[in-house]
Image (cartoon, rainbow, N blue to C red; front, side):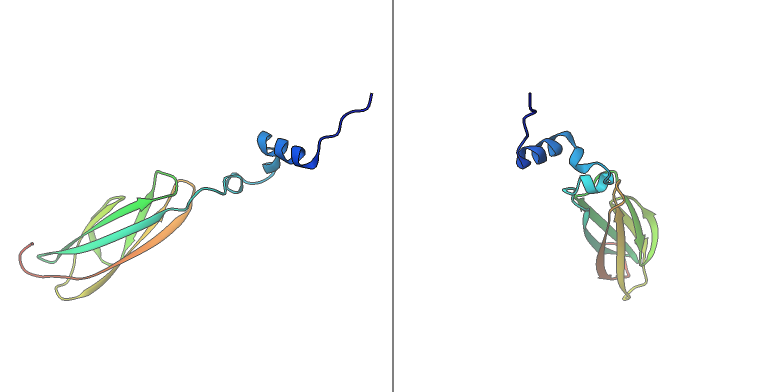
Length: 119
């Protein structure tokens, strides 16, 4: 008895359903619908030569790590940083966000440092 042939669309659908269509591809390629992380960074001078930054992260795959640059930081966390600055000097703060899959995003914030008492 002759074996029944499947139409080409059924072969493709079966390969997708079984995962065979992705055989040999790296895991990242097989999950191409994953969204890279994005950041929304805000830095605000607090007076007394102190500033504070807050970061909101969206997309990507948690957990995240961050690398802060552009000023003297006294404390850094994944989504926040505090530092010291020179009064009346303009600063450009940069943060690189890396997600669990290695995808990266960079965000920037600018502010002018304030001296005097904290606000």
